[in-house]
Image (tube, rainbow, N blue to C red; front, side, top):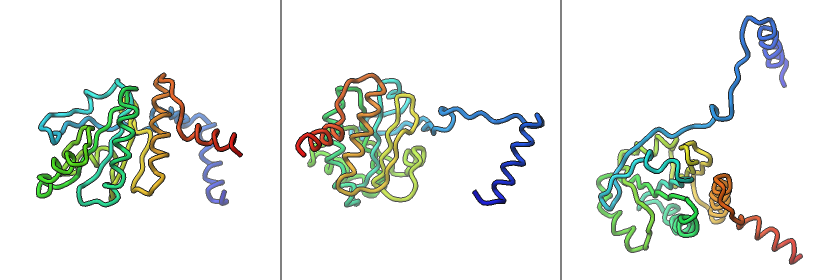
Length: 194
């Protein structure tokens, strides 16, 4: 630690110790970011609200657009994760940030690829910002059942889906669902084979 920082820290510690300033206690809960409530429309024309999804299990939110090539590569993996864990309590939302100009293509895009998760329209990027999105897509967040962000990832490279699935499994396990983590199983299988 640089001498200036060490001196500043020592000075602050002395002030706290003197009783002039109470030490700040920050719990783990206070350091996590809770996503503000949002409501939006799906491509099917339904309304979907975050508050209605809370308390039922983790929520995976994937931000994408029809013109985003990495998003198009990632979405089939998001569908596979949705298929695998929906009956275990996972909710998946695919939030398109296509603008109103290109939103007319979204419904056909989703239908031709056979995606079954809820696709939410976010042409003004309001939901994106509420979920701490900044800059590029694809952007994935996983919320716990209380709406706190527990995982964030921007971009897509082959293999990222394994980390995403690991995080989903971890949160489902925390919720009491008994699951084998595919990454752990693969590592154990490789160790036994070698």
